[in-house]
Image (tube, rainbow, N blue to C red; front, side, top):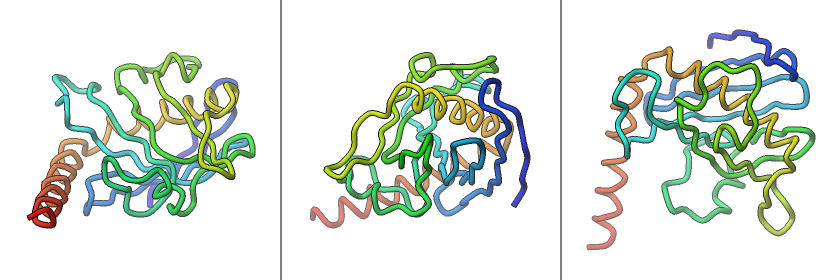
Length: 175
């Protein structure tokens, strides 16, 4: 698995180890840095096909393992392993990143990136404090920029195939 280290202004060095999961058309990132570590899986969302390179959206799933299907019980995300922590808080769930908003910037806030970041609580999940959400937003922007410079067409195609199979399976269970 390839590894690289990059500096995120204001947050220090971040080490990323990544690999593609061709069964679901996603990229799994092992993130390690100052006060942030764990697994984040980037999955292309195909509800609005990109019109040009560097556009489109990615679901960023906090944790490793098969991502829960759309509309799954929020507790399904708590069962993912290696969920990331940021500023000592365990993250849960998923958020969406618009790739164009992740364009190179000195530093972004969660608001600038348009993401919501939830932390685990004993009774479920709650929004992470602003400082934690901003730290995570900078990591997510880094992942989105990295993802766009890779085999995105192939990953998006594989993700489409997986979604079609899930939809067929769900339809068969309803019949």
